[in-house]
Amino acid sequence: MAETTAIAEVSLADTDVDPHREAWIAISQTHAAVTGRLQEALTAAELPPLPWFEVLATLDRAPEQRLKMGELAEALVISRGGLTKLVDRLIKAGLLERTFCETDRRVSYATLLPAGIELLGEMRPVVRAELAAAFTANLSVAEAEGLRKTMERIRGSACGTS
Amino acid sequence: MAETTAIAEVSLADTDVDPHREAWIAISQTHAAVTGRLQEALTAAELPPLPWFEVLATLDRAPEQRLKMGELAEALVISRGGLTKLVDRLIKAGLLERTFCETDRRVSYATLLPAGIELLGEMRPVVRAELAAAFTANLSVAEAEGLRKTMERIRGSACGTS
DNA sequence: TGTCAACTATTGCCTGAGCAACGAATTTGT
DNA sequence: ACAAATTCGTTGCTCAGGCAATAGTTGACA
Image 1 (cartoon, chains in turn yellow, blue, purple, brown):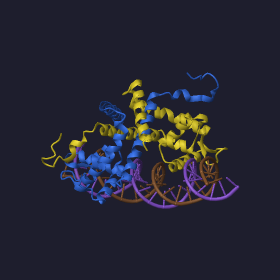
Image 2 (cartoon, each protein chain N blue to C red; image 1 turned 30 degrees about the vertical axis):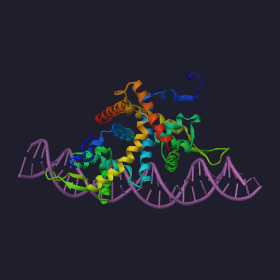
Image 3 (tube, rainbow over the protein chains, first blue to last red; image 1 turned 90 degrees about the horizontal axis):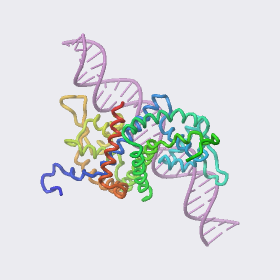
Image 4 (cartoon, each protein chain N blue to C red; image 1 turned 90 degrees about the vertical axis):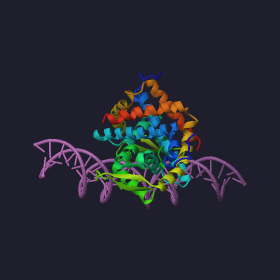
């Protein structure tokens, strides 16, 4: 295709027309931008940082509003060590409690407390508003559905192949 | 579908069927998962971490293979302070150099050096392979294009509204 | 049954990034 | 032309998160 024989000035510019990589760059930038805006909105409202919301929201959706540490770490896509300390902070704030498993004494659960549910109730509208500003104006419900499925498909192959 | 009329146990579960938020969760998880895989692949190949690649690749695509610090920070969606130190590390590794502007002595450029181009050449195939594993199997070129445009649209409104 | 392998969560250490304060340079307004 | 306000980049402080090592449990297999 390209003439690599000529002058070397342009070098590898031709290899850059990769639609997949372009898409990935767009995903990264958008993710960072939206995350930044979410964080900003939460700070402005004097609410805890975004990871706290992720924890609370994930637990709220779980059966009995509790999750094993390992499951929670996987859901949030962070390391187990990182999660331990993140949960520690939420416990210290009185939002969560650590409960234990009768049948397997290795596992511990992060369990949502009423105070956590209440805080979640305060954070949710802020997050929802920011997401609406970013998404609703640009995506129909059907498009959002399609986008979600696409991303989940990608994630599936990104996890399974390991 | 679900019977929300009964006991109040389920509480706010019904408000969770928000396609936009579902899509956002999928984006976050996928981004984290793919980023993790990229990082893993680079580490396995004994190459520098992902942010180094982002810097090198971004500069390589810039005119004259250099960018003002502010522009670079915006392209990578990180803070200026963070970028200063990131660039410091790349300079210490001999991949970049700091050059200055004649007409405006406040600005400094991050300028790609030959060693940086060479390293980029080593990192690119690794990154490309991982992205191919995640994307190519799941997305046609046309879908990738559409995905990119969608994300850029979202990012546009996420930045402009501030 | 006893030992070894696999798994769960936590801890210490270290690195990377954001925020706010700062110094330097430029632009604006008068 | 001078002063104030803005812009650009760097630095110190702080903290969140990953990795590797550890302790405590469970399961498997001889």
